[in-house]
Amino acid sequence: MRRLRSRVTHTVGFAVLLLLTGSMAVASQSIELGARPGELINTLPQGSLRSKLESCAANPPGRSLFSIGHRGAPLKFPEHTRESYIAAAEMGAGIIECDVTFTADKTLVCRHSQCDLHTTTNILQTPLAAQCSTPPDFSSNTPFKNVKCCTSDITIAEFQTLRGKVDSGNKKAKTLQEYLSLSGTPKAALQGVTGTLMTHRESIELFRDLGVKVIPELKKPQVSMPFEGDFTQEQFAQALVDEYKNARIDPADVFLQSFNLNDVHYWLREEPEFGGQAAWLDSRYRDKSFSPANKETFTPSMAELAESGVKIIAPPLWMLLSLNDEKRIVPSVYAIEAKAAGLDIIVWTLERSGSLKNGGGWYYQSIKEAISNEGDIYAALDVLAQQVEIRGAFSDWPATTTYYANCMGIQ
Image 1 (cartoon, rainbow, N blue to C red):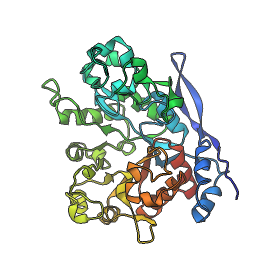
Image 2: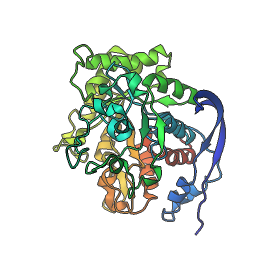
Image 3: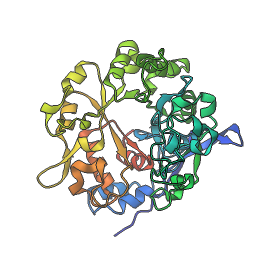
Image 4: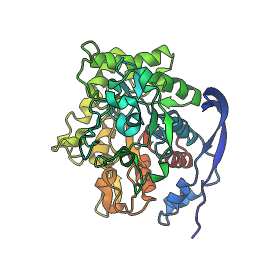
């Protein structure tokens, strides 16, 4: 049995900004897919998919819009940092995500949640910890049990003094060192790795220089809106668009997204050039009456979504896949209905489940009986690409998706 070695590199002809000794320098960027794709392919059973993927090992990699960097490349660098975004581009992601929230002075910044600074930055190691919504309680045996630090607790100037870290925090910890420790976790190798936090405006400039498109998510505020009585949800949604307009970014290069359908409808109504390709992140799985196997539970229906102007729907992976009687992976009823309504589909998130050896966890729950090894990520992705015909896939390690897209000729 031939084992595939995949470490392909290809230099592309555009500039990338790198942070060097406090100044911006221009460097030639290479797409580097590394060993991960080959390692996954080597665990696939012999068959047509494995043979096809093996045949592409020597091909020079290229950028693909099918490959979307989820928060950058957070399996390599802390999420939503300059370093993570550059790593995603180096892995061939054609689109990169900045989740967008705001600071106390209403500056838009890249964070997955408005209130995740205690797990994703070094704020607890700084005097700014005292400004957190819920600071550590050192009178308790578990001082970090309820800690909560939000971007809206601090100004943009204060935000920019922080460093990004791997998303983690031990609520049972008795000391700060214990709270921050990654020992004994799958992320242990990233202990001490930090990254540069970014404003949304800075991400726009970086992505333009990297030559990638953008997929910003308007995050649900964790503070009451209107914030401070004068910053409404619609103003927040408009502020996001305004930063692209002010930077003269082509609307065709921007895929707005939100879990709030009202945000998508606002963009469709007020900013149709941008709203025309906005994605609705579908969270109906939180509704106990919803089943991706039963179209009668889809409220609104796929046809109603399309009629309202929505063009792209973005569900988690498991909602798009199911098993047939032979326990083979096939498109779900949800996927079939979305396609029938003419909706484009973006899926989230590959490379986020940890080991796939025991069914793959939450993201693979609908097909867990068919998931038994790491290479099954490609078995699932193949059905998503070839049968569901998704437009793109988010990944925490974009090289995996880039390799597949390059091999299958998906631009």
